[in-house]
Image (cartoon, rainbow, N blue to C red; front, top):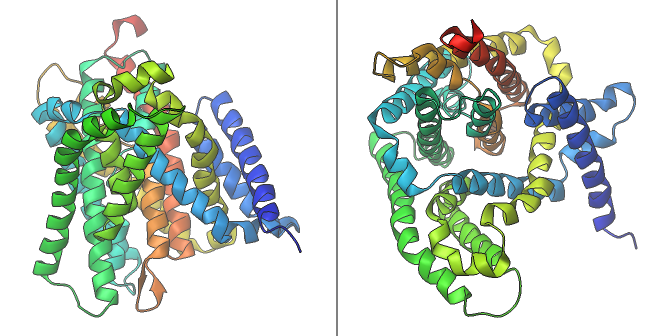
Length: 411
């Protein structure tokens, strides 16, 4: 009898090799590794065009999909660990205003693009398409600012603070839109009360997770500190992450909402005793697991892009308009950069990349159905991926140029 794990092992070997090769090539040309992983997945998933169909089957393999979903949970947990609830409260009114403008405007523009180019689709599809444009990739933006030596500038602090708030607002919008679509699929229809209930559920869960988490996590880690054995810090943190992710899913939200909240809640002060025991920071302990699973998600997303769909002009047209809406929508952020000394253009450009968050939203759309049809079909998904790739490619050189305008060192 064949070992059912064997095909998964071979698929993982191919996916990880493709991820690292693609990531290396991307970094050699000055781009984020995530872009190379995505492009590598596109190449692997379309090898059937040259007579190698095996990877197309891998893209729809259930076991690989589960690993990719775990990778997404860990990714949002890691992103959450990079900030704290205190950081969220300290970013100030400017970051909040930048974030709100940077979420609302792309959502409206994305909805409009969907209504214009996909008139035969449901308004739910248009709303979800707009939601994919809302969030900003914190990792890509931070990496660019760090490489340019401007991570401590006022513009950088506003950009990064707003990007964090963007992710939270985007996750709430995602929860609301996905919940409304699920309700509509069950025949309950769209109502303002239903939207209100879903929005309240999202906000109550996120707020409750942050408040209760701050109170519970120190006690949880104190209890874990009494146990014997190795790996207590990592295991306890993952238990906390997975429980919150499950609870988010149980109340009808995306599991990534709970994972992100878990990361925000956990602060080093909560587990200082376990840190001394393990002699490594929590982020350092989680990173190797993410190194294994997170690239699986990005490569798998690329593998699900069918290049044959690009032969259809409507897909390329949708991708182009989505990209323009994604760029223009984030330029509205500049209006929130109140203060004469700030470089508003750099703030708007720094908010452009969608990266992993846009892919996470689009992937959820592949699993949502309305009256038996997927909310995001293969053509629309491919258009979203093109938008993600283009916004990721545009940001580094554009931000470098924008910041250099007012830097006397570049004169």
